[in-house]
Length: 266
Image 1 (cartoon, rainbow, N blue to C red):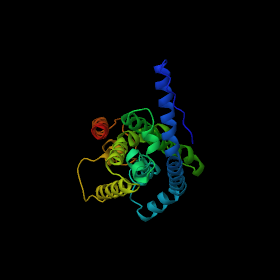
Image 2: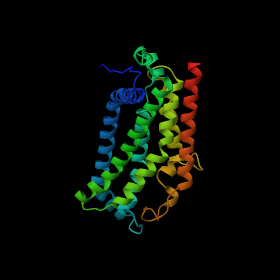
Image 3: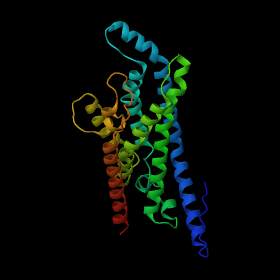
Image 4: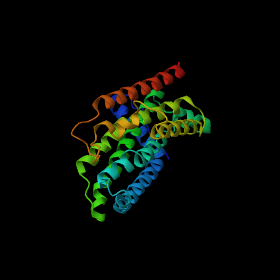
């Protein structure tokens, strides 16, 4: 792959735009395989869960006849609060892997280091693309639910799916920022992936098993405090304080990554 970066100094704006476009394309080429693989896995999970949902709900009602359990409660509990959320967390982290530290570990950093742009700009462009890809994964997988549900005779509100997709993706930017930071700290092809995925799995399952309690990003992602206890649909409110905290933490993690890069340059 050849990426041409103009060094025409007579048009600095054109040079800036051209360089950014080339860097964005480079980042996309490096991450698109992981992005499309993640999209396929998330879509497969949603389609499987939706198509088997009505039968699962019916069996549960037969086993517990006095318990009210709706299709919407199944979607929230099985997908937005657990399986889809967990797989999205893994996908969002995996698409952040890369960067100069990983390239240095694999011996392929010379091309990136030879580009006439600061290392911080390389990171910021890669971070912007990772955030966009993570948001896309969350929204598309969530919106598949109301699209596929009519095929099995069920209806799930489009607005609810969109809202849960936004909450999952926005609060989950903490995961994206964490992955980007780790990719700038650890050198080596698999070090950041091993450390990050092990830590995420431990924290995720500890909260789901209630070994750990208290405020956590996963409850914000599924808007746990804002859903009806029976239907598991949003009650007209949103976890704004939690979302604000998650966004601030994400910005803080990205700032730390930026400082790390600047310090390394100095």
